[in-house]
Image 1 (cartoon, rainbow, N blue to C red):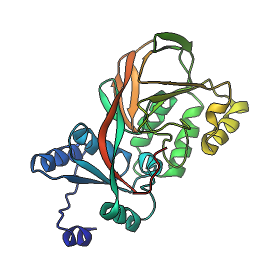
Image 2 (cartoon, rainbow, N blue to C red):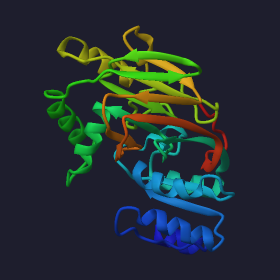
Image 3 (cartoon, rainbow, N blue to C red):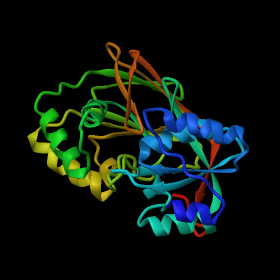
Image 4 (cartoon, one colour):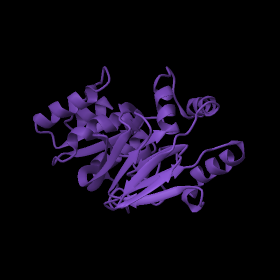
Length: 271
């Protein structure tokens, strides 16, 4: 990586703590860099993209995380060599971004079970897909869904979600398609709310999640709008691209259209 950077007149800065990537990206922006590259997972991407949104700078991505949701969505995924090739040959694409309770997100934000899992997962010393599954299985035993109200486009509907996700792209990562059909350039967010899950419907829903057919069942609520407001009984957890925050009972999800330049393959048809 360092050799590649030196060859192409770039520098490499290592993060040392949470939010350090944000500070490094802000410094690079102040110094006039036109291309700033995130090397890491969705959390690192989130920290850097939050600084670059709304600026002329372009975000490059070398995905090295456990999920890589946005990278997979934009086909910036695979070997490091492939990602480096995209840095040299790719084309900047304007994509939408989102805000959830004021926190930027670029892949998926969510409440309920998925926020609880993100909080537990982030506390682990070792991560990865198998650790994610084991963490999920342990939390499933005790999690209790809460009813909420969802407002969008002048409508208001009640739902009791096991988990509620608002997607800018179509997946969490690892090809788990929580919002099949979502696109990062359509000016809309995709809300997917899954009803209470028990032993009888858990496995079919998980299978649909990975097959990309989750929203084809009437049990699952799927909505599209540029803005959602979710009211739950009390304040609680919220995650944005897997990063966890405390959030109020009323959470607003808002789209910021065409607000981030991201380097993607030239032949990409954005989904």
